[in-house]
Image (cartoon, rainbow, N blue to C red):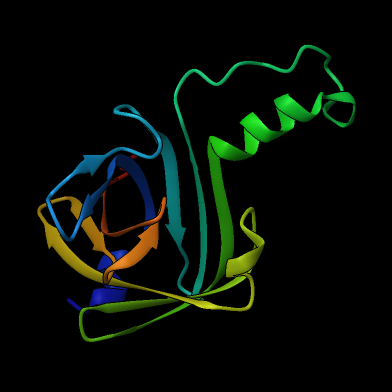
Length: 145
């Protein structure tokens, strides 16, 4: 089965960790119990949303009336994007069309893909995050209905 066919459908986030390339320092940018889903469609679209667990509600029900602190916290605890994707060998290329991090819009995000049973593991090449060179590893589990 091709990588694209394996990717098709919806996947639930199991874990996301960063590990420094210099010393093996591990961190979990969305906590130990993140929430998230990624969907790959047959017509080459991808949709992702990731958040931390237990995010607090805004004080007011109108998000446009939220305080700057509430808005900053909401952005710090959420990542979302959508775009198109392609696959070449074990590499996944996602062309980001819109997203919560504006620096990625119009750019291509590359991930190395492996599969273990009903799990999809996506790994980045070394990148700078939090001022350190890290590798990000994300584990997804196929959603079954």
